[in-house]
Length: 343
Image (cartoon, rainbow, N blue to C red):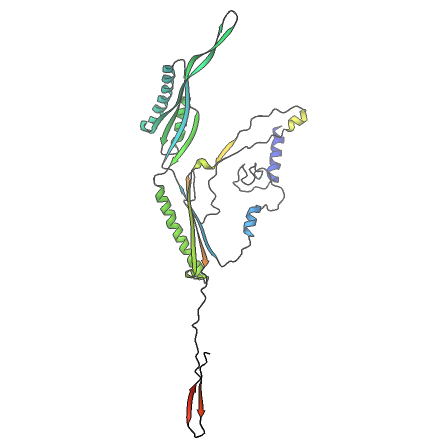
C-alpha cells in the first residue's frame, strides 16, 4: 500500500510544472481560493484583465497639463498597546473582586520578569453588576417567582503597553496562564506624525520640480499657464487592512463511494495583513516591510490651464484730408479756397 502511494505522488510531481510563486491560498482578485499552487492546466499565459487594460490604455493629448503625484511612507510604531477583556463571577462582590485581582496580579508578575514595568499595565473597569436567579415560592393556591441576587460579575479591560513586537508573545502567554483569552485589539502609536508629513511634502516638491523640468524639455512654458492645486493627506493603521478568507475543500469521494451522508464541519477563517499596494504611488519611503506598519500618505494635483489669449489692439490712424481749391482769375491772379468737407 505504501509503495502505490509513493508512485502516485511521483507522477503528480512530474506532471505538474514547478513554478516559483508567492500567491498563497488567497486570490486577491475574486476573493476565492487560488488553485495556482495546486495544479496548472495547459501552457497558455494567464493575464490579469485589469493589468492588460492599463497597459493598453489609449492616451488622449490635451493642452491642459496635469501633475498628479502620490507619496507614501511606511512608519514603524514606537509603542503598542494590547487590550484584553476579562470577566470574573463570585458569590459576593468581594470574592469577585479578589479573584479578578489575583488573575491580573499573576499577569503583572510574569510580565515584570520580561521587562514590562508595572506603569505599563493599566486596568479599565467596564462593569460590576449582580446576577439574578428566579426563586419560586409555593403557596397553597399559587406560585410566586421572585428575582434574587445569586452572585456578582466584574468585567475589566487590561491595557498592556510594549515597545517590541517580540514581547507580544510573552504577553499572550502571561494572559493565557491566568485564564485571560479575549484579545480585544492592538493599537499602534508613533511620536511625531507632523514630521512625517513634512518629509512627504519635501519629497513631493522634488518630484514636482522634476515634472516641471520634463514639461519644459517638451517645449511648454509654464509661465503661460494658470495653475490650480488640490492636495490631501491620510493615515492608516494596520487594523484597517486585515482581510479574511477560508481555505478548504469539501469534496468527499469516500462519501460518494460508500453512499453515506456528509457531516459538514466548521471551516476555520484565516486572517492576514494586506497593506496599501504601491502600484499607484510615485514615491514610497521605507517600502520593504516585515511587520504591520502605519501607512501615511499625501496626494497633490496641479492643473495648468493655458492663459486666455489677449487680443492685440492696433492703434487707429486717423487720416484727415484738407482739400484746397485754387481759383485763377482772368487777369492771372490765383486765389486759394478751402472746401469745408464736414457738411
